[in-house]
Length: 222
Image (cartoon, rainbow, N blue to C red; front, side, top):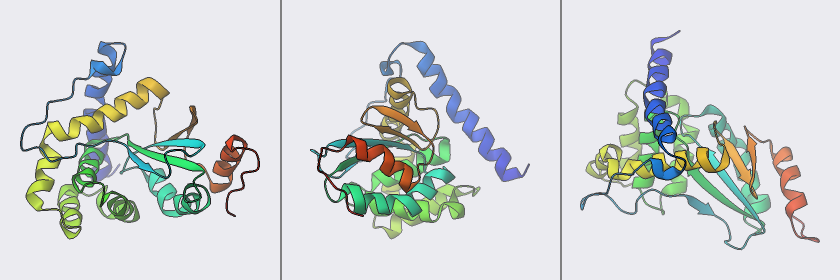
C-alpha cells in the first residue's frame, strides 16, 4: 500500500469516527450540533444546490463526495446528458448534497461553497475534471486554494471557509441527514422521488428510473 493511500485511509477513519459517534448519541440529526457561525464567517453558509425547475415532476437528490472517483465519473461523463435530456426541459429537479468521505472532501466542499452560488457549478466541474491531480495529493489544500483563487475567491476567504467550523459544520450535517433520513452510506447515492439508489447510474439506467415517474404524454429529449 502506498504512503498516499495509507494517509487517505487514516484521514477517512479520523473523519468518520466523529460522525458515527454523533449519530449514535441521539435518534435524529439533532444529535450533531453545528457550531454557530461567527460574525466573520463567509455567507451564505453551505447548503444543497438545486438545479432545474422547482415544479419539475421528478426530484433527484444526489449525495456526492468530491474525492469520490465514481462521483467524478458521473459528473464528467453522465450528468451532462442528464442535464440536456431531463433537467433543461423541466422534467427533473436535481439536488446536490454533500456527503464528504474524508477531510480532504470536506475542505473541497467548503472551498466550492465559499465561492457562492454563482461559482458553484463551475467549481464542481473543475474539481471533478481534475480529481486525480488533487484528491490524493499530500498538499490538496494548496491545489484547492489555487483553484479557488483562479475562480476569483480571495485566498483569505478560502482559508476561513476551510478552517471555520461555523462554515464546515453545515456540510457535515448534510452527510448526517443523508445517513439518517435516506440510509445513504456510500457515494454517489441518488434518492429519486424518495427511493434510494446506490452507486453510479448509467444514463440508460437513470432514464429507465425516471421515465415511469413522468406525467403521461411527457417526452424527454433524446
